[in-house]
Length: 269
Image (cartoon, rainbow, N blue to C red; front, side, top):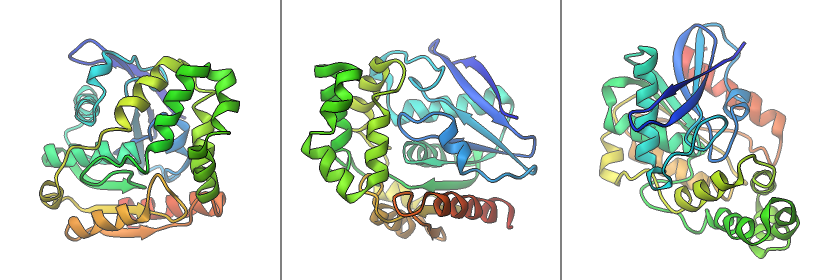
């Protein structure tokens, strides 16, 4: 059963984290705006693995802190601080989308702390991606203009949303979820800052990562193009690329294939 606790960062921000299991530690991070349930749903059900998920600033019960500090670097520093707080010297580290960017940043900055690296459905490579992130910035605009209740209807009339829904229904579903998310001010702050940024690593810095790496990608995904997963696989020497079914095509197969890929990489199963 997952247990939730909190700790305080060096700059005084209280962050919530979740720990499930008692096996080998895996810091397994969520996507932008996602709750704890997102990474938990695709994590292997195995007693030999311990899932540790930090709720990044502005997520779940974590405080937002200064919005100017909402960067991949800050999130990676917070993740490292959590490992220190738990007394974990080295762990497998990975995540989905935003979580993948945080994990990659952590592996590049502190390779001695990362035993294995998992980059699942990456949304960035070596630069910002304004085209793939456009719908998120539209969410910010709609939330500011219309608020949560009226914004839910308004976003579904916007061309950015309609284009996304036609190409990637799962991405569109994610967009709508922001209008039921608690603390809308955190949604505005997170989407406006993180969507316009990237992990901050140049190609040559990514290529220096020598940690055993699994990269998971899928098709039918505008926000997380399969081309990004392939680009990272080309940059990180010796990495494994696993292409799984997309949620837009088959949500059940997506979850099963995701879990299987993680289990094989982490446990050799």
